[in-house]
Length: 187
Ligand code: MG
Image 1 (cartoon, helix red, strand yellow):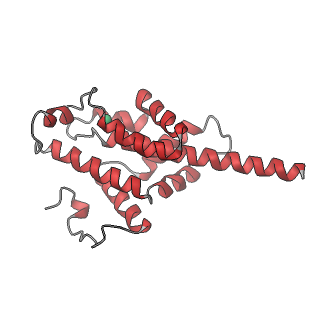
Image 2 (tube, rainbow, N blue to C red):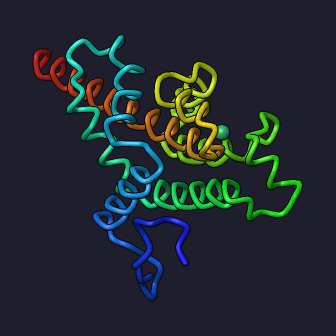
Image 3 (cartoon, protein in one colour):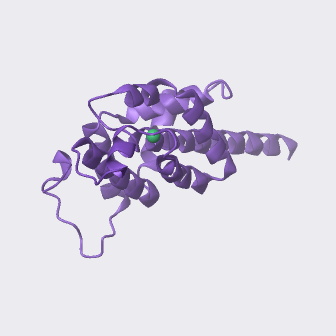
């Protein structure tokens, strides 16, 4: 039995290793089933970065989110986090962790730890960016947190971390393009 409808007929590979395209497809399907779209994350990332980059477009951010969703770290984090959230939602964990996760206890901290492990792959700035999302809870993150019929203890942080790293990827690309331009002019 699968906790996720979108993975009901999924047959695992013998190696447990999946291609980037397959991980991306599963990530998008799982997020969608839990009420999060690629655009939701792209808008979080766009709003975090648009004040620094004049020529930033939402399409660019969407591409960045799609790229991040191809990676194994995100694949494992999304699957693990969402599965725990659903188990808590169904009351299938043992107490006292059942209530701690179901009620999203602020002192729990392991939801943020998983998110930080994603954000940390992109350097300290990734962790700072995620911290910002965690404190300010923009847009979709506060919507996820306030959903009472669904447990999003892990999901809200994972979504914040993906948005944070998507934003950094784009910022780094822009910085590099600018540096190359300057270099060309100097040469
Ligand atoms: Mg949380």
